[in-house]
Every structure is written in C-alpha cells, then in structure tokens.
Length: 232
Image 1 (cartoon, rainbow, N blue to C red):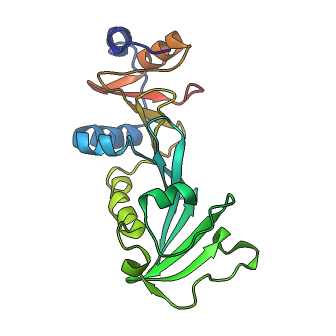
Image 2 (image 1 turned 90 degrees about the vertical axis):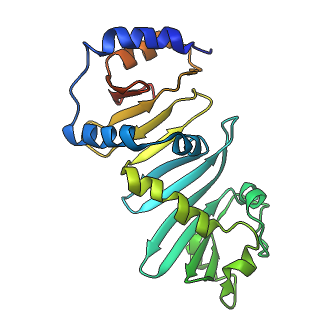
C-alpha cells in the first residue's frame, strides 16, 4: 500500500514538536551533523548503495536494485598495505565490472581478492576457507584484471561516506518505502530517518508508522530521530 507523504507529515508535524523523546546526546550530535552537511548527491548515492558495519572493521556495501532485490555485496577491509574485498553474488557483480579473470558463476559462492599497491596478489574462492588455493600464480596489475571499472577504486571512493558521517549502517529498502535509515552504535540504537517529500511507504500498518514518526524528534524538514522498534 502506498501512503501519501502529505497525510503522514501533517500528523508528524502536529505531534513531533510537542512529543519528542530525548535521545542519546552523542547520537543526536552525530545525527545533527549529518543533517547539516549531507547533500542531495549523497542521498541519491545512498539510494543505490546500502552500508553495514560488522565487528567494527568490516565495511560492507551492497548494491540495491530499484525493484529491491540485492544486486551484489562487497566486504571491504584494509590491513596495513593490503586491501581486501570479498565479492558476493558474482554474476551480478560481473554486469558492472568487466574482468579477464574467469569467475565461476554456476554456484553460490564468494571470492576474496587482495591488493597491494596496484596489483592483485591473490584471489581465493570462498575467502580461502577449506584450504582453497590462490587462483592466480603471479600478481596481476589491476588495470589488466579490470580493464574498465575498478572495484577497489570504487570502494575506496564510496567508503568515505561512512568515515564522513560515522554511522553504523544506512539502509534503503525500496520494497518497504523510499526513506533511508541511519543508525549509530549506542545502547538505545536510535534510528535517523530521511523522509523525502514524495515519501511512499509500502506497509499496511500505516498508523503504526504515523505513531512511530510522531514520537520521534524532528531534526529538520525531512529528518526524524526515533527509537528503534520492530517496524524497521
């Protein structure tokens, strides 16, 4: 069910100014910084890439289709002078990144690549689990392995969004609606919502969403900070 933004925001505006719950000060400070500095280009980017963090050092970016099936995922990690990426859903990955390496797309599996300077030094199927062997004999220059788009360069470029805003995850899920959720690590796990002017929510529990937003704290015309609950 599609919900009209005018109806929802009229309820939110009516209640949120008087019914704002106090939030964790540190989280609110970070959220306000994001609200003040984020631009439309970044928001557009975040309608294409979801970000999650695992164990505080694994950065995971997932490409999202407009129809809401996940396209493919990267796990991105840098240790000393070596950069690692793990590629999931390889068949979809190959639609964006042309390569001379023959990835096996016949089964569900992932590959772990390691780069030092401008050369890929290893490619392991299943991340090297079960004693799998390095699939390349000698290091390969990146521009030889990826002659067009380079996934390492792409990830280095997009990962600055995580560093800039210091969030734990940002999620855009078209099947649920065209809003974006941002979370920060803290005991309350407050969620910052970006709700666009043309908001659509695909959810039968419309009034639950109205209640959720009305109890949040408005941080701007399109931003509401709420306590995490089961509507995510």
